[in-house]
Length: 230
Image 1 (tube, rainbow, N blue to C red):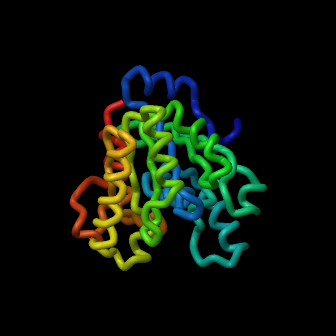
Image 2: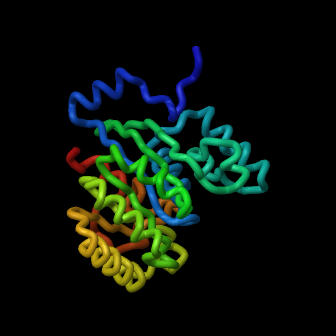
C-alpha cells in the first residue's frame, strides 16, 4: 500500500467534511518572494500535517543544499523544474486537516505572467490568503490579486504582512501597510478582509501567537482559518 501524501485528496474525507460544513477551500497568492511556499510549509509543519517521511526528505534536501535547518518551502514545491528555478509556476493543491477542520489548499504562483493560474486557484476558494512583504508594502501585484478576489467574490480575504521580522517587528511599518491594504480593498469592493503580521520563516502568528508582535491582538492565521464560516 502506498503512503498517502499531502497532494492526495481522499474523496470520502472531502465528501464527509463538505457534508458537515467543516471543509474550507483556501488559496494563497502574492508577489514573487513574498514567502508563500514557506508560509504554507510552516502552516503544514506547525499544525502537524506533515508525514514523517516527507519531513525527512525535506531535511535531507535542505542539508544537501548546505542549509542548517529544514527549508519548509520544499513541502509545497510540487515539480522538480519549479524547485530548480526557485519559483512556483503551476497551482499546487494540498489536503490537510486539523481537529477542527479539513482544508484543501491551492498554492498559486506569484509571477505576473501566471496571474491566470491565480484566477484558477481562487475560483473555488472560500478564502484567499494574500502575502505582502513587510519590506515592500503594497505592490501592483498585491492590487491585482485583491482585484481577482473581488471579481470572483471570494467570501473571505486574509492578508499576511509577512517577513515582519525583517523590519524588526515594527508596529509603525505594520500599521502603515495595514492602512494601505484596507484602502485598496475598500476601493476594489472587497467585502471582508483580515490583516495580520507574520513571519513564515520563524513561525510568528502562523499557528502560535507571537510574543514579538504585542501590537497585534488578533487570532493567528490557523485560528482564522479554523473559525471562518464557509
